Length: 175
Length: 175
Image (cartoon, rainbow over all chains, first blue to last red; front, side, top):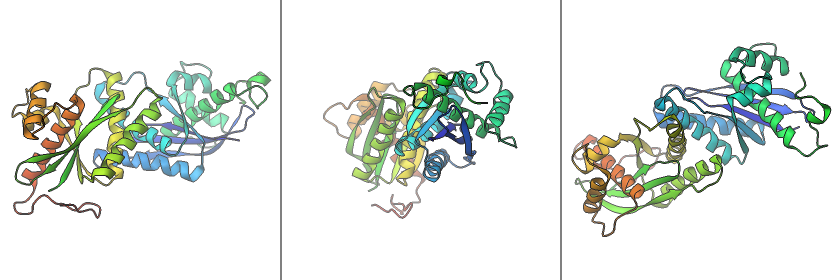
């Protein structure tokens, strides 16, 4: 029952979500939240992301991490800012010796909602449903949980047959 | 005689340069080189930048770091990649408790050549001249040395007269 970390990096808010992969195609909610970088200098904000991600890993002990892969940013300036936060988060995972996988937004939506064309609200609703959440998580935390679910699903489907995957039971993910 | 680190981050090569600020408007060459990230996965490449920068800081003991500020990247994709490397380098400096300052390419050229319109070769020639180098450094190392020189000049002009260039930060004090 592997613990899986999902990270949705951002220059102001980095969402995180942790799920436990049951190994039977399902995920159980463990934790989620946001790292807010505040209004300090750039290096202070990046250090908050870096230390925040390391602290989460040290607290919960996930062994693997999924992070959203960005294909198109609005413009070069926002891409640079996002890249910096992403770099800080990825280095934190690497320094904690986690496996790290990247997923596009389309892959995440496909894994959670079943279609890459889903909108943010649909993703959030499905995350709540799949993890049996009674209240709506903050949107960045919800996105991070979606990434964690996508990562759990992808890892399961890559595991050798018989090691506990949803695919052998004909299910994509238990709903 | 403060040691100053200059970093020119890049997704494939990160240049570094260390100079000693004489406190009399001059700089003495200490070291320079390149961190090459190779062809591994993204998190491995970012970890190489992060660990490389930390190792350089631990080896030479600079107290302050200048890094190039990017205004315009070619496109969003290259901005994202540059941002990730930049984030890894900045977090490394922050984790080593260095002061960190950002300079635009124009500020660096102005400080080294005297005009913000200088080209890369002019910057390289002036770096060689100012630091009395007998051989031409690799271009990324040369750019990093130019950033270090720019940072030295800017710091000197900001420090109160008579206080020299030593500043304490996070319990560290080097002269």
